[in-house]
Length: 230
Image 1 (tube, rainbow, N blue to C red):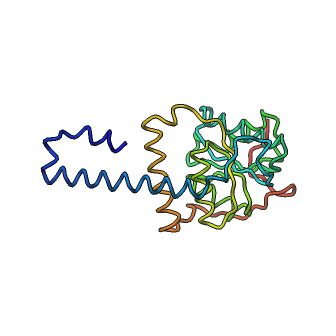
Image 2: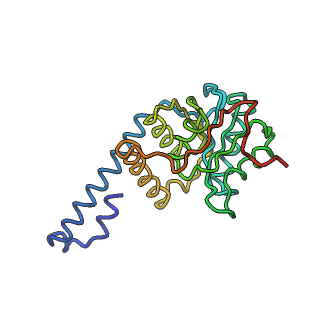
């Protein structure tokens, strides 16, 4: 990526102070991105699985939100349903954005899981998962889940697991189907910045979720907070 950016700068500008500073900033930015990537990868390299038959069982699976109906959403629903039906998780906590009335990731996930044969009683909803950090930390602080399986695409599960470790949460990941476009410029750049942000938020700022809320114990006798299954 750095080489690509440097090629955009004409060689005649390299001697000018402004552009020398620009090049220095590009090198620093590139170094920060690469260090963030290595930190997260090294900490999570043995903590994600693709094979439903090989992943260790845990009580709670945390399904991270995506735009309802898109390919990331569908793949995460398929992955979560496969874990449940293989008895690798007992409960599914669907966590996503419901910041406005016309946008509701958790309810859409709940309905999609029910359509895949997951009983409504096995699904809990978190409507304040406004970011990956919010979803992961709320799983413990609000829903009491200290041992979780995080369900998303691999680039996302690794980042989420790393965040979990910073807050004392024991997490592993199950990787939903990935897509070729994850390796194109915009998604790759977005994820690079998300890794840097995760390290700053979790390790330096020790950021907490935007909302806390009343405690919910995930189990057979608890209120789920989800709309009734159709």
